[in-house]
Image (cartoon, rainbow, N blue to C red; front, side, top):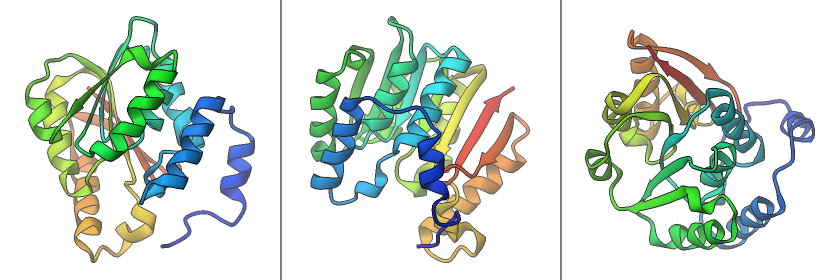
Length: 211
């Protein structure tokens, strides 16, 4: 895995970022202690970015594709108003069990609705408009997820897509996941329906706004 920042930069950025609360800290620790792929966790810097973007955009209805253990969902739910809604999609019962426990412990958990099953099937059952979408699931389906949610997104709505730098592998894509992410990035870059900027936060976040 390539290092995308100079040693110490990630720690420096974290130290200059608003703290997450004790519940999210506990969730992060339990995820690292019990899950097979804890690096899938969004983490505090990106989590605070998600919360801020929810607040700045005034989002009231969010769709998340890829719950994992619920860190990103709870981060975004913090930024929602009390009557806001976050729908999160996943099919892993092990990680969802952990997410459910933490949602139940959070004052923001009441804003979150889990739909378990294949995300593309679940999206077909949803209606718009959505204010914000966060995509962080299987990389081979990024383009399919994007095209499925764009019609449900309101004009001026935001899509955030995680891991779009893929530890630098997009520069010389070889593996199937490398190629899928690079093809997704190229598709978005040429898409005249949206404005976009690829942020070098953590492992890359594509920030996309629908015209």
